[in-house]
Length: 362
Figure 1 (cartoon, rainbow, N blue to C red):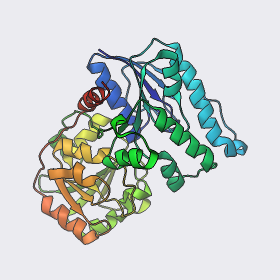
Figure 2: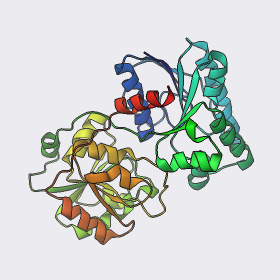
Figure 3: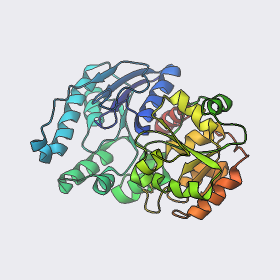
Figure 4: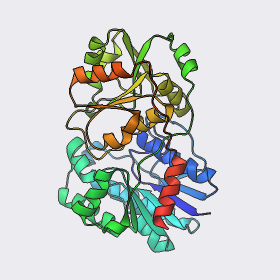
C-alpha cells in the first residue's frame, strides 16, 4: 500500500466545498482510503462561506489563514504564495509519504517543499492552464510574477497528471514539460447508482413527462442562460437545475425546477431522473476542461446532449449527441431524439482514476 500525502493549496477549492473541484478531491481521497492506502490530507482551508458539503475519510490539516483587508488587494498573489508556504510547513511535519499528490494552484509550491523535506515523489494534478484561466475570468495583478511561478512549478514536478488531452498538449508544447513526465488521465465520478423512479416520483413526474437537466455551477461560460430558448422549442418538457445560482430568468420559469446544491448521492438520483442531461457550452468555452457533469450523466445512463467544443466528443462518446454551440434548434432536435431512450451506462469511478494515476507514476 502507498502512503499518500494529498495537498489542496487553493483557497477557492476547499475539500468540503460545493464545487466539482472539491468533489474531485473528495472522490480521490475516498478512493485512496477504500483501497487501503495510508492517506494524509493538508489543505489551505477545509471549507468556506459556502458551507460544508460531503465528508472526508481522514482529518483535514490546515494552515490558519488570517483575514486580508481589501486595501491590500494588490498583494493578493503574494498572499496566495504566503498561504502555500504556511501549508508546506504543515505538510512537512507529518510522517514521510511515498507520494505527494498536489492539486496545482498557481502560486503554490507545497509539493516541492514537502519533497525536499521527505524525498517523496511529487505528482502535480493539472486541471486548467491557471494563468490563462485567471486572465480570462478574473484578474492577474503581476503577470511576470505569475508566469515565473507557473513555469517553475510545472517544470519542477516529478510527474504531471493532465485531466484532458488539451492540457497534456499544453504542458508539453506550451510549457516545455518532457512528454514522459505527463500522463493524461480524465476525471471520474461517484460510483452510486441513482434511483430514477424514486427521484421522478419525488419531483412529481409521471412516466410520460419529459425532464431535461443540468448539473453543476451555473457560470456564464456554462451556457445555462440559453436554456429558456430550449424550453420554448420543447413545450412538453421541464428543466431541472441541480446546483447553485440559477439565472433569474430560469429560476422564475414555470417549467423549471431548481433543486439547489444537493449531496452527491441525491445528485445521482436526480441525474438518473433526467431524460436528457445538458452541457450547452458556448463556442468560446474553455477547451481544456473535463466536466464532471458529463461523467455523472454517463454513470446513470442518462443521455447527454452537449456542445461540440473542447474535448467533449471523447467524453460523450456513445452516451449522447453533440451539437454546434449556440444552435438552439439543433439542441432541441437532439434532446427530442433521445427522449424515451437511455444511453449505455459508463461508470468511470474515482477508484479507477486513482489506479491509473498510481500506475502512471510507478
